[in-house]
Image (cartoon, rainbow, N blue to C red):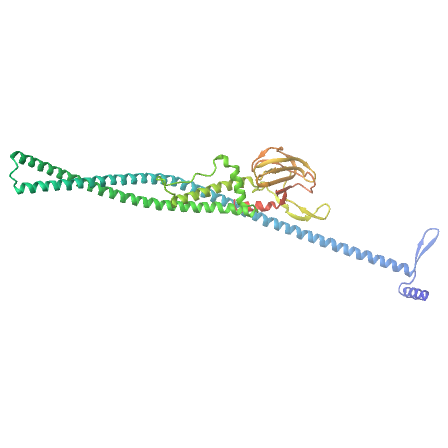
Length: 444
């Protein structure tokens, strides 16, 4: 059965591919090669497979080339969009900085006006107190004079009544004494009346002056309220963006401010509260508003110190581009997926790198995978790492400030090209550095 099937297949192939002979002739002899139908079929199938493989490989190469071109175009477009975004953020940052400077100038001017107004207010209070004391003295003197006037008037009336009754027992000497007494009483009454008129005039002048001072005091209070309002608005505009920046970075602002306050308590502590009362009374509404503004000023100063100690900056100030973000990514060497604990900034070799916050260098040397590495310990349990450097410019134990140059960009360690690997760790755990950089760009 099997033999017959093979024989039929052979006969079918002979009909379509008859046996052929390929003659090879030389000077002395002639040879030929038999090409059986099976051999011809194998040759045709091999040729077909070769042509098909060539077509498929060519199509794959063309598709890869087209895809690579599209990817490069998309990368260029993304780079242009990102550059435009960076330019917009830079312009916005400059505007924010100018607004902050203008707010600071307004705050300084308002603070000077408050000092002047406080001095005028204290002087006005002193003058008012002096006027009140003078009025009390004048009223007391007036009451005494009026009592004496009434007493002398009663005595004079008694004497006049006695003289009119014509009592005969009085001698000429007594009559003379009575006339002298009456004359003395008349003189005293005239003096008392004159003093009364003078006192009334002085009292009227004092009342007029008190009214003028009251009007001035009302005007000063109105101006004082306007200054307080401007200061409160300036404090709100200055403090809220900073609070938003720290909260956007995932930081607890209350504990952070308490930590800064404890660290700087030996340099003066909180600002002394204002007290506009010189009589020992409880602070009034203006005093409480001033105290609240001073507390906000102290809070603003604490935020400023904290912002200097947290990595709200970019380690590269020259032209660069982001080549890798935070999170899982494909390993360029193994092809597998692994966690990328930082962000990569690509630029030319030797590009200066800067500290993003105040801190202390805890590592400056070679570390496996990182190459030449700088670690800086900051406040609030924050640590920054700068890897793959070509040159180190700091030493272990050195204290650095934001903006100090710590090294140069390179390609040391496990890399595929020149770049900076930048990490931010909080409590030993890596966090996305772009959270801090973006938070700072939205404010400064």
